Every structure is written in structure tokens, then in C-alpha cells.
Image 1 (tube, rainbow, N blue to C red):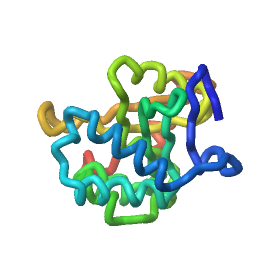
Image 2: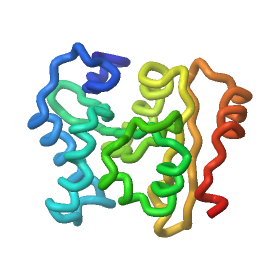
Image 3: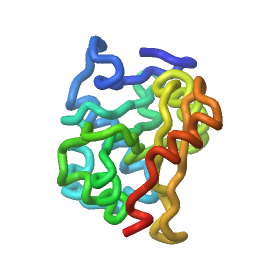
Length: 174
């Protein structure tokens, strides 16, 4: 699928589109190694976090031509799974039920420099225009736990606030 001159591979969102696991793995690996935050990870650590994503099909790869530019993956969690994830982010990769609830979380967001804003626009306008979702701030290990909230373009700020009220994060209470 193509949005704003960016090709998007996302089997969960566009199941009729053709894709190849090896090519997706290669694109994610390339982006992983280009990331200052992740490039020192071992191959085993990367595989531990990437293979479950590919198997879940809950990802989007952003490319232009044959060049990978970015990648996200997500899970739809129930309150208890959400609490476990917030307390220990690696927990999610050993628990394969990524569709156990209605609390959407972006688990990984990788982007080459100067592309993140474009992907945010595509995500909010085209991939998830009617959804609210959360993400852990990527510098939480340095600055402390921070949860970011997002909404699709077709939702109002009031709808997002209501979604947040209806889905309090249990981890804050534990």
C-alpha cells in the first residue's frame, strides 16, 4: 500500500498485499543496525524482539523504492498484559498473544533521521485514523517511565480523553 509516496508493508492491516518474511526481516535488521539506541544489541537479542513481530504480522515497514525508512510494531493488550508490559517492556516478547484486548500499544518505532514526523502522519491519517494508542517513551531508561498517548486523525481530543479514562493503566496502581 502506498501513502504520501511511502510504501507500507503491513500484513495485519493490508492482508491481501504480498510480502516476504525474509525481506521484512532484512529491512527491520537494517533499520535496527542504523539505530544508535539498538545497534549494539546482539543478533540473539534482535531476533528475540523481531521474530515474534513478524509472526504476529502486527507491524508496518515504511520504504521508498527499496530503501527501508522506518518500522513500527504494535500489540492490543488487556489490562493485565498492559500492566506487565509497562512494568517490564521485554515481557511482551515472551508472551505471544498480542491481540488479547483493546489497549493498543506501539512496541517499537524505528525511523531513519528526519522521517519520524512523516510516519506519524501516515500512522494517524491512514493506518489508525479511528484509534487511540500508547507507547513507552524510548528514553524511559534515562528519564524515567513516560507513557505517550496518540490518536488517529478522525478522533477528537475529547474522544481520546474518554478512551484514556475508560482504559486506566493498572501498572500505575501496582
